[in-house]
Image (cartoon, rainbow, N blue to C red; front, side, top):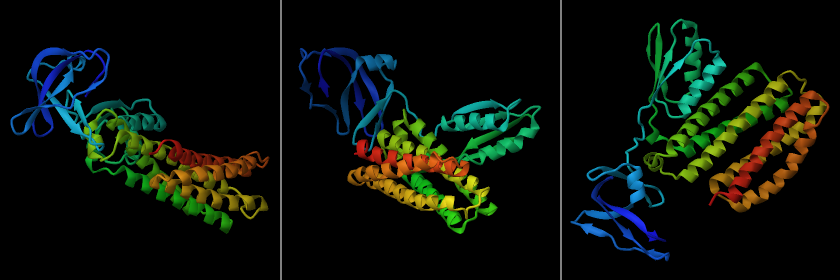
Length: 356
C-alpha cells in the first residue's frame, strides 16, 4: 500500500477462502509527512491467516465493528476487491408491475427496464385486465431465462432461470455478429434477385428479435456487474472489457434495425429499376467494411482498425450523398446504409483509441 499522508486504519484478519473478520477496532495513524512510502510487509498469523490494513473512513462508512465479516473477491487482473457485504451472482430481486391502462409498447419498456436492472421475480397485477396476458407472454419471450411460473385471475409471476455464472459475453457478441452477417446476406441476395419475399421479411424479423434478446441480456450483465465484483470474476472478465462488449452490442442492435428497415423499404419497390444499381454495389462494400471492423475488435488489431477508419470514411461520404437523393426510397435506404457505415467506423475508432 502507498500512503501520501496521515491515514486512520483498522486491521482485518484474512483467512483462507473469501471471508475476513475485523479483529482490531482501535485505530492508529500512519503519518508520512506528505511523502510517498510503500509498505511491503504484512502480518502473518498462523499458517494460513494474514492481517491487512483497512482505511478507517471506509470501515466507518460501512458501519463495521469488531467481529463483522468483510468479503474478498479476486478479479482477472490479479487484484482483490474488499466489500462489507456479500453480493450473490444470482441474487433474487423482486418487483410488481401494474398492467391496467397500459398498452403493449408501455409494458415492453417497463418490463425490459426491470429485466435489465436485474429483477429476477416480476409479478404482474392483471386484475380486471385478463386480455393483457398474451401481450405479456410475447414480451417475456424476448427475455432470456424469464419464464412464467404462476398465473391466477389476479396476478401472473415470471421468474428468471438464467444462470449468470454460465454466461459468456463474447460468445453472445459473436452470435449477434453472425446474425448481422445473415441479415446482410439476405438484403444483398434480394437486391441481386430484384425482389424480396414475405418469407425473407419474416426471416429478418426473427433474426432481429434474437439480436434484441442478446442485447438485453448483455445489458443486464453489464449493469449488474457494475457494483458486483463476484459477477465480474465469474464472467472471467473486467469491468472495462464488459463495457467494451456492451458498447459493441448496443451498436450491433442498432445496425440490425437498419438492415431490417432497408428490407422493409425494398419490399414496396421495383428493384429492377436502375436507380438501385449503385446501392447493390455499395451494400456489398459496406458489409466488407463491417466484417473487417468486427475482426479488428476481436483481434484487438489497432493498425487494421486505423486503416479501416480511413477507408470507411470515403464510403460514408458516398452513403451521405445517396441519402440526399430526391427519390424517397433511394434516400431512405442510403440513410440506413450511412447509419451502418457510421457504426462500423465507430467500432474501428473504439479499437484504435480505447482497447488495449
